[in-house]
Length: 127
Image (cartoon, rainbow, N blue to C red; front, side, top):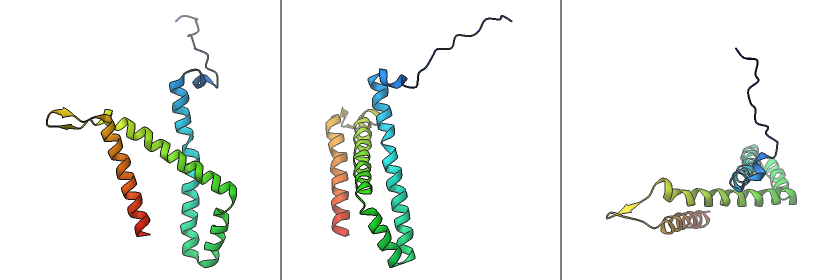
């Protein structure tokens, strides 16, 4: 065996900032943090709903805190960002062919957004 040390490339903590692809990836992954907060808040809200009116009123007052409102808005923006990136990848992952011709990517993406809008409208009318 040789006494030579293997080459280990130095990697700084900010290696991802140098490449736009990795910057975009890291920002996309960081948007999950407000979504986690929203999910935890919603879970506790369901628990408070089960516990009774006083617990529910306490949860509602917590949710009306301006910091919580801002975090929930960030969660909404993060989920829309995730949806946009997912919808834009969909035509590449699963191209749709009709009568031997590939459907335009824009039509696929717009159809997905139309489905989101229709489901959202249905839920708004239902509730």
